Image (cartoon, rainbow, N blue to C red; front, top):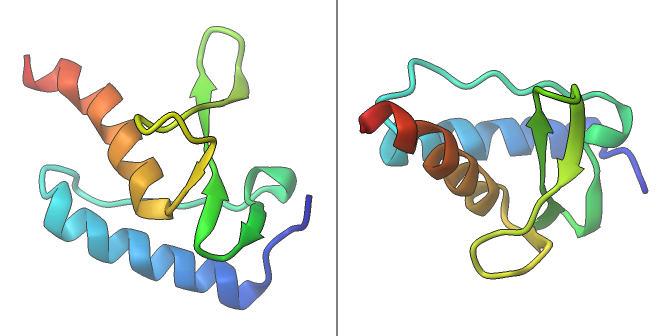
Length: 91
């Protein structure tokens, strides 16, 4: 798996921060870290693999989006993660 270019990383951060402001205003901010294989693309800059951190095992595990796909836009992955983690805060 390729490590994304600096341009791709900056573009990803821009898109996700813009999306967060409109779709998830309850978030104070979004910090994106790029760590080797954990910031990678699978095909194109518009389709990304998605992994969630499992605190119990302290590992990242590949995840599927609600569509059942293993890849999607960065915004799709952010929406999925926020629905999973923020839903418990709203209850």
